[in-house]
Image 1: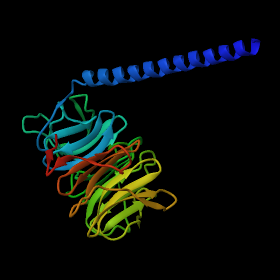
Image 2: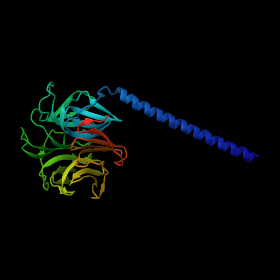
Image 3: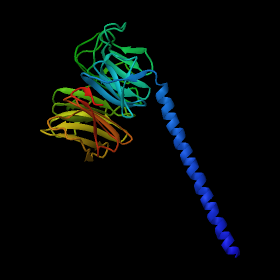
Image 4: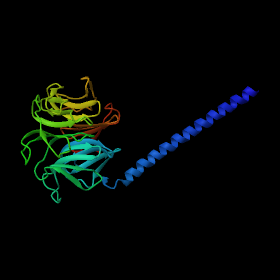
Length: 314
């Protein structure tokens, strides 16, 4: 009889424990949901958006969501909805997301007091002000790469300015000083650049001939792809993602230091290819050469179209 009582008591304790755990899990879920709702409500610097993105000159992931640098400013795809950054209506070029905000070049809207072109600027989507880092009023860097958590910035300077001739340059202090880099080994017309998030010596370049990788600060590059129109450059700590068009579109994950590759599933792009790519915690976003955009929540296994021919899809 005593054993029966003990067993019943043990079973009761198990139920109590599981019930308490269940309540804790539910409470944590409610708190997380409330936190997400509070954050969304407090993001007064974002407003609903629907319409045409125009051309896009950059894509990255930030706390607010996937950020597209569109012709009429920064547009953000956040939890299934389109938003636009109220303070940033400018035509940003060479857009790069960093841990403290973003870097960009491009052109301000006509009513702005900012100098045109923008040169190199630093900003946050939540703040109206921009910090001019270099060459404002002088240069518009279409091809630029910057480290997410380091101070390296690489540019391909198309037109000479007061300090830089035409060619490849690198800054290791967010634009305070610059040095020319040899960039030996690159073939084809330069289209895009990306910098490793923590290692400022590692940089990739996409051209109309393929993808080229440097691990010595851009002094020399090695081809890591087949020949074709490249784009979609994006680094995380261990991988370089890149897109390639060789008659059909592909997306590849290249393991840094190991040279191993794996395919990243894509939606059916037909006669289209990946122009920009961003990734965070198995979530992915792409923008294509023909003006479509897709997002995936499962590493590319399933894709949702969110832009068609430049127009947002509701």
